[in-house]
Each structure stands twice: as C-alpha cells, then as structure tokens.
Amino acid sequence: MSNIIPKPLAEQITEGTFYIGHDTEIVLDATCSQDELFAAELLRKAIYEHTNYEFEIRKAFTAPVSKAVFIKKCDIDIDADIKEQAYILSVTKDLITISGPTSEAVMHGVQTLIQLFVLEGGAIACRVIKDAPILKQRGFFHDASRGRVRKLEEYKKLADTMSLFKLNQLQLYIEHSFCFKDFSEVWRDDTPLTANDILELDAYCHKLHIDLVPSIASFGHLYKVLRTKSFESLCELDGMSADSFSFDQRMQHHTINVVDERSFDFVKNMLDEFIPLFSSKYVNICADETFDLGKGKSKTKADEVGVNQLYVDFVNKLADYCVDNGKTPMFWGDIIVGCPEYADKLNKKLVCLNWGYADNELEYNTQVLAEKGMRQLICPGCHGWRHMINKLEMAYRNISLMCGYAIKYNAEGLLNTDWGDYGHLQDPLFSIPALIYGGAFAWSGVRDEKEIDEQISKLYYGDSNQNLIELVKKVALGEIVRWEELVQYKEHSSHYADLYSASEIYERIDTDNLKEVNVEIVNNVNLLLNKISSVNLEGKKLIRKIELFANGQILMHEIMEAIGRKYYNKGASISKEECFELASKIEHWMYAYKKNWRQDSRESELYRIEEVFYWYSDALRSFN
Image (tube, rainbow, N blue to C red; front, side, top):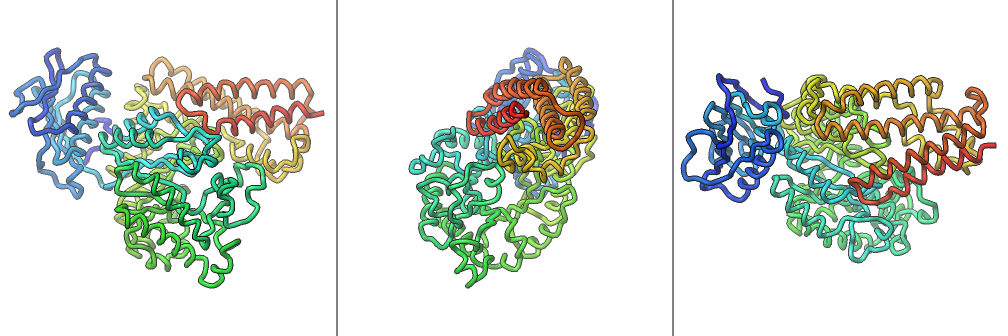
C-alpha cells in the first residue's frame, strides 16, 4: 500500500505501471468547468515540480485512449456516506482517470494523484482508489491576532497545504487585527489584515474548495479593544485600561458589558463590516472565556437572572443577528459545557465548537452536547502556544483522541486549532505536522503515531529515512523552561533589579539539570542538521527554523540558570562578565529571530516579544 495521506477508504494495487513521457497530457472532459481547470493547473504545476515534465492541458468530448490523465465530473459507484466529496482514482498502464460527482470531489482526487507523483515520480504503480471522508468538515483554526499576522501569500500557502491533505475549512482568528474603518485606535500600532486581503484570500480558498470562515471575538477576549479610550467604557470591569500591557492579563480579562446597549451596537458594526467579505455561510462569533461576566457592570442583572442566563441571552442576540443576515453562527463551547442545561435555550442554528486540549481529554463534553442535540465541531490543538517549539507528541495524542470522539458522536467535523497565546512566539511552520494529523484522522480515522510521522516525513518533507518528525519531537522534549514561564517571571517581577519578587514562578521550574538538557538539545539538533542535504525544501526550512528556535530554548534555560545562581543559591555565584556575555547572546539571537519572523509575517506585535528578551538582557546587565 502507498503512503498517501489521508489513508484512502480503499486502495487496490494492480499489475503494471503508468510511465509518463514527453507526449503525456492532462485531458478534461468537455463538461468540466473552470473549477476543474484550476485543479488541472495545480496538477500540471506539481508534475513539473516533481518530474520536470511539463504536461499540456486540453478538453475533449471523449476520453483519451492512452498517455493521459483524464479528469471528469460525474456520478461514481462508491459506498460512502459523504458522496459529494468522494472520488475514484484509477491508474492503468495507459491511462490515469480521476472522477467525482462534484468539483470538490475532483479536487480531492487530484491532490491524491499529486501525492503519488511526489512519492513515485514518473512511474505510478497501477491501482484503483475509492475514497471518501468520515467527517464532512475538516478544518484548521489559526490565530491571526495575538502577536503574529502573516503575509497574505503565507495564508495562501497554508491553504495549499490544507488542500493537499484534504482539509476544507480555514478560520483566521481576529480580535483587533483587522483594519476596521471606524476602529483605527484599535489597530493603529499593528499591521492588520485589510478588506482586500480577506477578499483575495477568500477567492483563493474558494478555488481550492476551502471554506474561509470569518472568526471574530465578540464577547470575551477583547483585551486590546476595551483598553482604548474610544471603547474602554464598554468593558465589564472598570479601570482595566490603566494597567500596562501584559501577555498574561490579555489571556484573562476584557469581557464586553452586555447590559450596555452600546455594546451590541459596537459588535454589530464589526460584524457588518467583516462578515460580507466572506463567501462562507458560517460565521464564528467566538464568545469564549467570558471570565468577567457578572462581576462588574452586569452584576446586578446577573444577580437577577443568573450569569449563565446572561451569557445565553447575549449569545442568542449575536446569533439571531447572524441568522437574520443569512449566516449560520458558530461559538466556542467552554461556557455551555459547564452549564449544559442551558443548551436548550440557545438558538438552534448555532454550531458549538467543542474544544479540549489535554492528551487525556474526557468524552463527557462531546457526549452531553450530542445528547442535547447540539450541532458541534470537535476542536483539538496543535500545541505550539506558550512554547518555543510545538509539542507534537502532545498534539498527536490530543488530536487522535478528540477525532475519535467526533466520529463516535457523529459530530459535523473536526476543527484543529493553532493558537498564538503569549505573542505567537512559535513559528507557524511547526504546526504543519499537527495540521496533517487533523486532516488525516478526520478523513479516514486515527492512525499509529510512528506510522503517520514516518509518512509525513517522507511525503511532505522528502525524507527518505522517514524519521524527521521523530527528531523534531526529540528536540522539543528538551524544554525545561516554557515561554509562558519566561513571560510570567518578567511580568510578576516588580523590576528587573528585583527578580526575586517573582519567586513563585521560578519555583515551578526544575532547574537542576539545565546544562545537561542543553547538551542533549544540541546533540539532537546536530542529528537534524545531518539530514539537511537529504530532504526537500520544506524539510530544509523546518530544520533551519528548529535550529534557530532550539538555540532560543537553550538561551531561556541559561537565563533561568543565571537567575538561579544570582537569587536562589543554585550553583556558584555569577560574574559580571558572564552576565554581559549572556545578554549579548540574547540580543544576537533576537536579531536572527526577527529576520526569521519578517520572512513570512508582518511586523504585527514582534516588538512585544523583543521587549521580553531585551528586558532579560537589561536585567542581566543590572546584576551587581
């Protein structure tokens, strides 16, 4: 069997080989539309990239006899529940045929054939593949707000990768990072997405049969919005704008005051400007982690009707507005799973995004929402947030577990999340293996970790030894000090001249073996570097970025080791020369980090990450 990802529903290898040649062509059935032509162009480009053969494309009333890839949209004989996405790929010695009942189905078949050209080059083994997904919606949710906004071309590349692995929904999370016409105070110090960006990306995703769904904070998580002079009066709690910026506090507060009618008008204005840019029938209003609800300006009303009812009422108000404008609303399920008895009171068209990120996540939430008859997507995570490098072994366990629940309880799909907590320090490319996990498992079910890692290493990164992902995981396991802890230690310190004031953060960290762990990180990075000549361009990019971020992880360890020696009697006293040398190393590393960031991301909030590292540089130089 082949190493196709996702694993096909059925694949039968037959005798013989299809060999490409100078006269091989791509032929579209005469009834094919521009959608199929776009798929054929993708195939043509991929064949040239992997074989250096440049096929011609034409249309015909009848199927070619030989030396061709034939694409047709038609009914097919396949036993599948989701037939509109099903396809058949047939390879004989003379002809490759892709057929499916819809343009989306044809695209899936084309992407499978592209993978075969990647894996087998110009000699494709004969076979018949009959394929269809288990889950109808297979999505990826990417944070485009809390720290990092990527360049438009990078979002298009993300869509390309999603399509290759048969994902069909993309959401970009927005809190403040969109260029709203009337909210300039909110985005003025950022590099936000524009209406033109969204329209162009939506059109591109549409060609790939990816549903670009608008996703915007409308209830909680309005930290930057509700700290502005223009909108601070809409915050549930008073005085929140007086404090200096904090990564930690951005995660905890800033819920909108639902008893103030101006709040709904504010959200409605955002939706009116944002939603029309998307062709999707869905809109994600988020409405998660409304921690402050009923604790400030809405307390009197909450005491009267209850916090849960107050929550449901505002969610329904937002949902009703979306429905009135022809959209199906989605929302995060963390509040409603805590009070499932209120689920019956919600707008019946709402789709619950039921998230859980633990590797031992219980199925209770999925079960109770299913029993309540709620529509739901199950949402695991890529586990990059709060770390320097993604914890892919954790992502595998979480995604495979949650996908199993989605299948068991007949969820509408899987939405795999890639959050940017604490400034989105991690490189977005580190989430690609986890993205593939989600797409693969939502299409054809969970697979063995070693097997899928080997297949990703070979197919996506061109690693003939098939152990690239295994080595990346080993590097990431060298984490002792998390990025989250480095940030919290800074933000809990009264001043860099008094780092002992944040001792409760330091005491969480096992600093006894930092030097030994750093040596292990270097050794594992060297194993990766030994592979750089034997992987493709994506593999080279990954290795280069892992090397950079691994050195950042080592620096975080060295920072905490220095603090331990200075304030906590952890080893010999630290000299002024050592402190200055480490401070300089941080600054040189940060220079390289910024170069890496700017290659594929807008400036966004890079300066906030920079401030954290330079704060430690200044702290080290202040040691007496």
